[in-house]
Image (cartoon, rainbow, N blue to C red; front, top):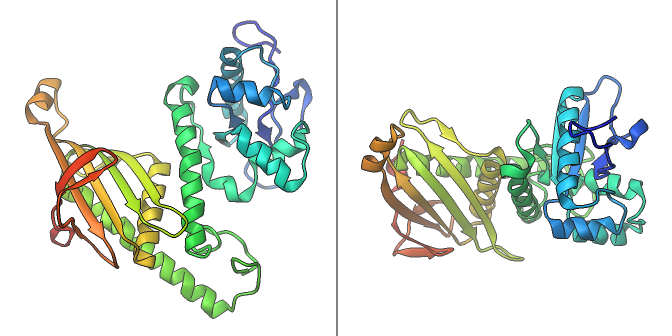
Length: 326
């Protein structure tokens, strides 16, 4: 089988699943009666490509050819599978994973285990035909970073986000230490996390409603045990209240807000960008105004910052009261 450019398809073996058909196409994981799924790990830089070749991950002659081969695999997967997901294949993470589990990095089975490792599922992105070399590669990099933050937040909440609280997880009722947790205690913990998550989502919604139409970026920082929890999300909001935001960014923002509110940790948020309606280019030039608002939290609620704030180089004035926003 050849590619659209007439080259023989090379192995881009950062894939996971069960069956390995001829032509060394991606591994597939397929259960009887279950949705067909395809998972692939993507090397997001030439440096990572060079490091991963030492483990036989792919045999493309250079990174440009690797991206072309991977794009072809993804296009083929969209036609053959109901669900296509990707994550960044990080060589150092992979090597450390193999060391931890006593695996040989050169073995395909090691790559399978790395790609479908449950604690790393937060790094997966749904692929829907995006241009690989466009915005999708940077999104994969951010998804890895976001996933590490989500794991940190989940640990702080004793598995309340992904260990059976909000997003499902283990069905054995085990605690963070693997021991059994009484059902009533487990359910009470889940309700506590769920309530904090809903409050965090509502805080974010009120920030956006108060800002009105415009193009914004939210930056969020929570001072947490083990290191700061950070999140950033770009938001496009129309006059009718419709909001465009990447799903993975929304999940991260809500999770970090949840952890901060649940544990009553010190936190600061800055929403900045251009405020105005999305009309013609001329109208935009006339009506878009720079804006930057800041809020802080040290307990169960968020309020306008007590003084001007600078976060990640962005200066902002105290924001509006979220309690007055419907």
